[in-house]
Image 1 (cartoon, rainbow, N blue to C red):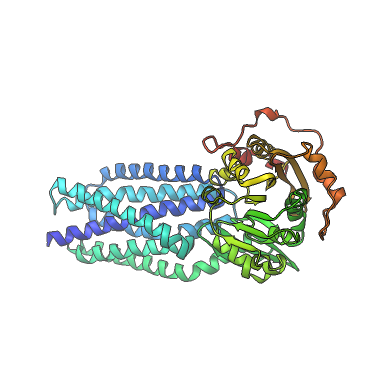
Image 2: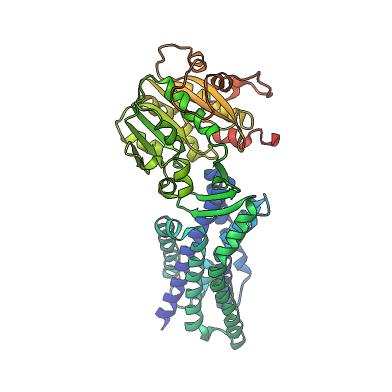
Length: 513
């Protein structure tokens, strides 16, 4: 009998470890999506939750009686808060810019609850096991639950159920174990306590069940409030949240809330990204595209008859599938990703370059802005060195580089980092109506004529374009005087072991908006 009761308590703490670690990952991932700078927020949220667990443990010193009752109340509370955490964050994001306060508050709250549960279970289990077995067994089950939770989140929770429904799975795991404990250890409770806990448990069960059915419409409503135009498509992938909105006959593509393109003016972005590099090279046969899962860059590359093969490497298979099958994008990209010349691979760009031995004439990098360390490595000295090795002599590389005016130091950092890898570089910029002033960094490996800028300004385009021409090249390669109060030599090279780019980007000149 004692062994069975002890086993129930261990199962409860196993469930706590399982749901606790997954809650940490959910909140950290939400912080990454909404706040950027993923490494910082992952570290801070997990550290804060561990600290809060310590505070929770300290609080339990004041609990002298009715330990099982307190434990079950904490379990029900944890089930409820964990289940609705992501829903709260998504809904609040539509109404406030201070979403970080909510995410960190939830981390503190969940950490406190978990920290209070562990010592309570140890004290309850003290009646059934000797001290040395009691402590080791309880902590062992907590740690085993954490391992299973991490595996669940990585392989099932995030990729299959997403950030919205995974929390409800955690809530039901905790809730189910709590009910079993309540049933089999009810003899340790007073009659009035049992009735109160049954009422509380019923409320939590109804809330969780209702939450599963109302979450999707609530999220859609909150998401619609976040965007000024009608949301017509959403998908939560393992890597990001994809949203497409519509206004009249125009469509916008957003990744994690950041605009990637608008059908009205995307050519003002993709033509400068592709055509200067492709036209500058005398014989672009083999082209590598990193990112660009929407297919618009590939659409422009396919205009060059000399091109024999285009390899597109994009991390998110959901994005490239969208580029291949979504009627909005296939019409926009002219079905480019299904062209026989195009090979689509889902891989990390850095890992791809490390693992293959192919050489390219042109490398076009169309990645999201470097808002965090993980994306910053794809704008690093080491990354550009890899690109340099994979380019044939005279090869051309170009990357989107953010805004030269709203993120001036970040723009300069990308240019200087590419130059440090051995490229002769030229900055470019253009006014994209829905994005603002945008920029690119173009580099040439071992140029025959070192005046690459002059070559760019004299380019003649012999393929069909809608905007870019020789006159445009003079404009997009020309910058006025520097007007910002910082020295260019104060901008450091972005390196993997010294990631500075994301700091420049986040600091930015965003107050000019």
